[in-house]
Image (cartoon, rainbow, N blue to C red; front, side, top):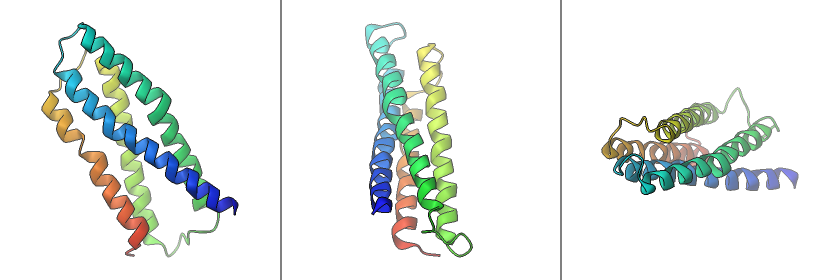
Length: 143
């Protein structure tokens, strides 16, 4: 029964993490198009910092902690579940993307952004592609 609750909270944490990973680059799109030092730019800085600090990062940490608890609970056969190794690699890539978002948030906060709105539109697709691959691996377990 405890494992069921851990799984449920793991899924909830992932949903919150993905929401942040999908919304933050969208904020960057609009922030990149705003004038530095403007009221609009300062509002975006606040929104980006709060989203990263209070939702996205805690959700990522919860996802990792709960996911590792599940992985070491005996549900995964580490020697035979190749899908899990692939999933873990993709989650590491998702975590690296999270790190990039944190760097970009800092760049915007210091008015050092040099990237275009188009760049962030493209970057916004990365978590979607990773999420699709991860969900397919978890549900289908192809290898």
